[in-house]
Structure formats: structure tokens, C-alpha cells
Image (cartoon, protein in one colour):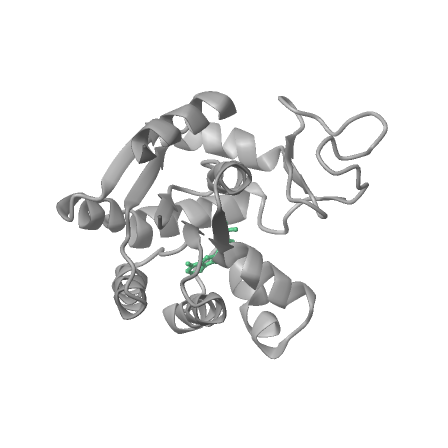
Length: 214
Ligand code: AMP
């Protein structure tokens, strides 16, 4: 099964993708994680995209499509994929369709996670993640434990993303509405779209995704 998690920054795509990976034999492909890894290891591409990412703008289609193509070729379509944060433009959506057809695969479902902007600002500016396993924390609703050890993996490497500030977030939201939200209509027209309330509790969102997929 191949699915896309679609939604604005902070909608909870990464959190839900990790839950799906734990529950099903699927592989999470997050272009944001791949780009952050390139940025922190200082590759030529990572250096090129760093400023664009920090400002909250979109990296070029060519770069992200290349990253996804590489991963799919490495895995040779063996796994079911959860595309998290990809595609973000119509050109990326077309490219993904072609890549899947080339592997003899289908796109089974696109889950749109609906959330309101003000909730996103509150969520994102309070967000930190475990650098080791990606568990997400929130200063208000799920603070970092007093012993500073991740509840999921025990590591003590909490990080805040450089682009999780209000200015970058406004730019990321603008990019979402201008460049990514047309994908809602694109996949609706293909009959692939299911929408869930991304503001519900994490477990309720997971349950809605489960019923959309089963
Ligand atoms: P994310 O972790 O998905 O929020 O992505 C973080 C940042 O990486 C975005 O704000 C973009 O700068 C860049 N990025 C991630 N995925 C894409 C994509 N599919 N297309 C363009 N830029 C992307």
C-alpha cells in the first residue's frame, strides 16, 4: 500500500507516519527529514538548500524529486510507502505518479490532515523533537520529561527545528496554500482523497486514518 499524508506544516504528518510505520510494514519517506539530514551532514546539496529551508520556502522540484527517486530505486518498490511532506507541488505529484507507474505500483490513498492556522502556530512554536527517534514534544501539551530522557527511546537529544519560528511558519503556510493546497483538488479529482480532522487527539487522528485506509 502506498499513501500520501498531505497537510500544512505542524498538521502531525510525521507523528502519524511514525505510528503507521510501527503498526504496518511500511516505510516513511519524508523529504523534510532527508533535506535536514543533508543539511546537517554539510553535503553540497545540503548547503544549497539550508537558507531556503530556514526561511520556510520550498526547495526546487528537481532536488526533492531526485531524493524520492533515489530512495525508491534503492528499495525497488519492495515496501509500502508513506509519503510525508511530498509531493508539495503539482509537478512533484505528476513525477510521483510516473515513478510509481514505472515500478508497477499504485497510489492507494491520499490523507488530507485538516487543521486551522492559529492552532498550527501554537503547536509549532512550542514543538521540539527527539534527535534520536523523532518523537515529538510540545511545551504545553507534552513537555520534555523532567529527567530529560525521551519517553520513546531514552535518548537525551532534544532539538528545535531552525524553521519552527513564527516568521518561517508564516512563509511555510503561504507556500502550503499557494503551492501545495492545489493537490487537494488534484487528488480529489482522481478519487484518491480522504480527509481527517488533524486537530483531534493523536490517537483519534490515528483511528480516523486507520478507517480511511481499511
Ligand atoms: P517538513 O519537515 O516537511 O516541514 O519540511 C521542512 C522544509 O523542507 C520545508 O519547509 C521545505 O523548505 C523543505 N521541503 C520538504 N519537503 C519538500 C518538498 N516536497 N518540496 C519542496 N521543499 C520541501
